[in-house]
Amino acid sequence: MKAKHYFIMMAALVLAVSCGQRNASKKIAPEEQEAAAAVDSLELKYAPKIEIGTQVEDFTVKTSAGEDFTFSSLKGSYVVLDFWASWCPDCREEIPAVRELWKEFEPKGVKFVSFSVDNDADAWQKALAEEDMAWLQVSNLIKWKENPVAEQFGMNWIPTMFLISPDGKVVDFALTAAAMRTKLQGIL
Image (cartoon, rainbow, N blue to C red; front, side, top):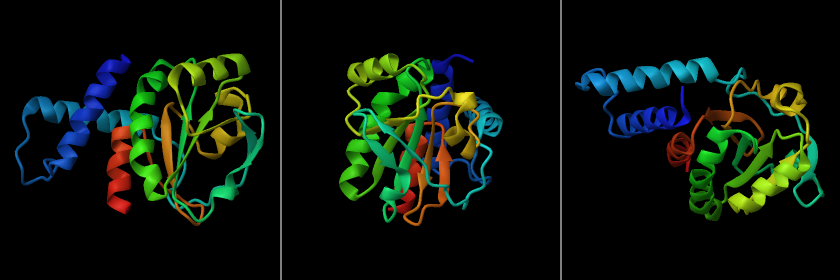
């Protein structure tokens, strides 16, 4: 499925949920039902294999500036942990929406960490410059399918964002910034 179609379906789902139209007592147009069913199917297919409530195991990786970053240093704050890669077209399309999410929720105390599963430092740095990703950027420069941090979160798809509680537990996940916005609005 092309990224554009995926995001259109995700937007239809977010709109349907935000309008309360997924309530069984409401009538939904057939095309909206089809889009919502397709998104539900994608979420099931690509959902990370991690239990909500799982305590995040601490990890230390490098920031884009070459400094050590330890995940537990953010304990006490809600954290959006965004997995992405420079070579991923869906990720690159989603970055402007993640930037807007960061601008909206960072002033409210939510911390944002984008974790690149790139294994090419030059490609990662180039993408950061091209996309103007001003929030915290980290990587261990290990391929996605071999990456122990991605494995900890049971990653099946990128981009995927996780919402981590102040006590370091997985609250939820989202495949798009729009879905993460809905989750953050429900919590804050």
